[in-house]
Image (tube, rainbow, N blue to C red; front, side, top):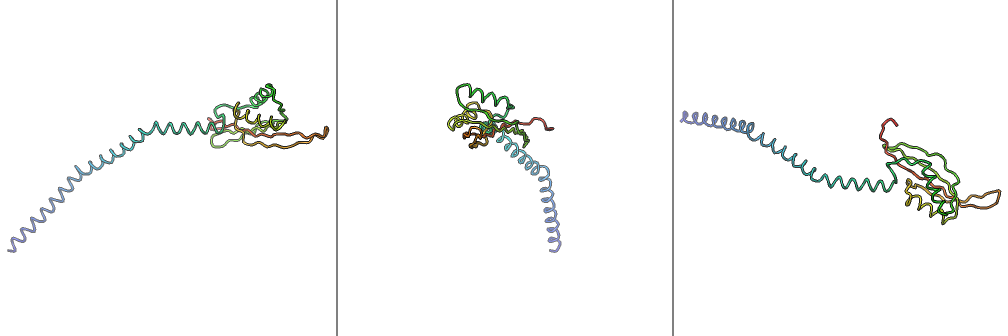
Length: 181
């Protein structure tokens, strides 16, 4: 009986070793490449889904950019002091009674890849005419974005009269293409 139990032990160990060897060989040649291929297919499917959604995502990004451009005014052209003066003079030529008192040169500021030009204008006239000018300047002629408007009264000491004035800060945003600015 002892011989049979030793014989069965050897067969058992041999069968276990063969099963382990079969598992190692099948893992190396069949299971591992299959799992690798499965992962690659899953990654390709994710890329395909991203590519299928790309036109929709591009359209959404274009809408956002259009909204931003609409909010901040002109972004692709450089608004100069002459452009603002021409806009004011064309408004006054139509018969509107607004007077330009002062307009210093622009303050330039670089931030996040944009050159921000800020102009300050000081105008004089009646309240109704000044409010109409603000609307015309920003909406009709769309010269930059009005960031601030302040009404105040100035007393002319020579004539002893009070005049209503409007101080406007308008900004234009220009994308900087060069990195050395």
